[in-house]
Image 1 (cartoon, helix red, strand yellow):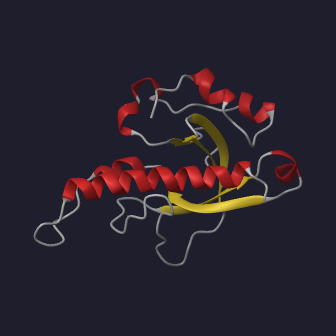
Image 2: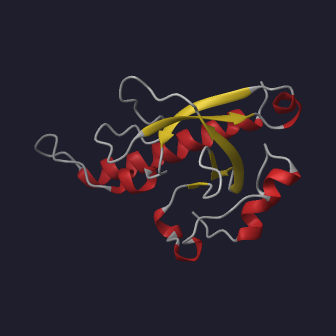
Image 3: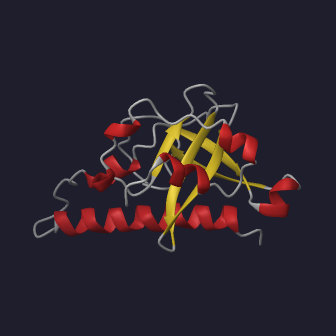
Length: 163
C-alpha cells in the first residue's frame, strides 16, 4: 500500500459527512505505520470505540469508509470475511458501513465480519504450515495477500455502489 498522509486519508472518505471527517482521530502511532506491510489501513477511533475506519485501495486510489461496530457479539466464533483466517489471534466483529451517496443518506448499509484490530495484513503474511510434500508455502502466502486485497476492495465497492 502506498503511504498515506493525514490529508490524503481525510479526503478519501466516501460515506461520511464533513463533520464526521473533521472529527476523525488517527491512531496514536500513525507516524510509525509500516506501509509496505499493509494491504489496507484500518483503525478504531481512540475517542469513539464503536467507530472504526478503513482506507482501502480501489482502482489504485485510496477510498476511506467509516465503519460502526455492531452492538451484539456473535454467539460462535466468526471468520473474518477479508483474510478468512481460521487461526485468528484476535476476535472478529461485525462492522456495518453506510453506503455512499443518496443510498447512505436513505439509511442503506452493508456489513462484513473483520478482525477487530484490523490485523488481516499481518495474518495473511504469516507462512502457512506445510500442507503436503511439495506444497509451495510462498505461493500460498502470495495468494492469501491477493485475496485479501480483492475482498477488502470488493467491500469498498459495495459501499460506493448503491446497486
